[in-house]
Amino acid sequence: MTKIGFLSFGHWRDVPGSRVRSGREALVQAIDLAVAAEEAGVDGAYFRVHHFAPQQAAPFPLLSAIAARTSRIEIGTGVIDMRYENPLYMAEEAAATDLISGGRLQLGVSRGSPETALAGYQQFGYVPEAHDQNGGDMARSHTDVFRRAIAGEPMAHANPQMTGSAGSLAVSPLSDTLGDRIWWGAGTRATAEWTAEQGMNLMSSTLLTEDTGVPFDELQAEQIQRFRSTWAEMGWAREPRVSVSRSIIPITDDESRHYFGVRAQVEGQDQVGHLDGGLARFGRSYIGEPEQLVAELAADAAVRAADTVLVTVPNQLGVDFNARLLAATKAVMDEVDAAPVPA
Image 1 (tube, rainbow, N blue to C red):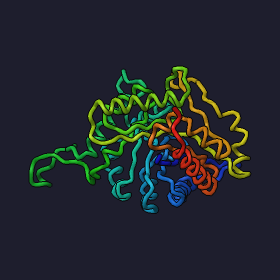
Image 2: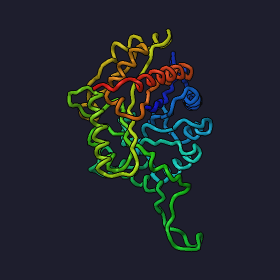
Image 3: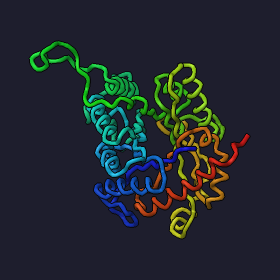
Image 4: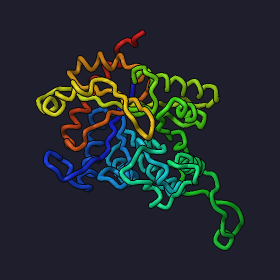
């Protein structure tokens, strides 16, 4: 069965129509939505991390709070921009959160997407080399150190006056299996292959920063196929996981029809545009009656190829609306799972 999670950007703004008007409301409602999602049988609560913006920015306190209020649901990120991160401090935070949750942390990391701040990571103290203009190499370097740290590799020399002996020290605490639950957010087929080479799970979004002219779901399915082929070639012992993100809005009542009925006509097809200086293909939204969505999602090649689907939620519409949306989406996806895979 396909796992279903929600992905929230954690928007908040004190404007007419918003039911999330402050940073506190965004955080408290995120916890409440995760609790409601678990009660509805949803499998995961994931949060996008953005800096210098009225959105979720510090994931570990939020994820720890959700862990303390839930018992089954996976908690994760999609994704943390590693250009901003101190890898050793992040290793301590991640391990502590995973231990609190009982091993439910699914940590999506990557280079990140365009931010509201120009090179905001430099204000956090991280300046890439001159050749690394967008910080991609720095993000991968931070990720490498982070992954070695959570695996227990020594990271500092011991002080003999304090420890009684010479040697090296790992960060603490450690969570033994956390290393198997790190995902890389890949925006291209080549990056997906690199992700498999590194032994990380694949997290693919609602856009790809390349375009070959084929429908988005087919291009993303090729990305997944290349990831899995490379994973097999590397001979990793465990089975990898693959997630894709989708905007899915079942029209089930007057409120969902009021907010999204017209948008179905505009957002029901792929779009091609420019992002980060190149072409990008953006996947369609799935908006409509549940029976219609079952047929459309059953024909989505990437949805059928992934083991996890992350549903982007309009969090500013509040907990009750999104809890109903997630329950309806889970019912749709249960039927998609039961539908035959198209040839």
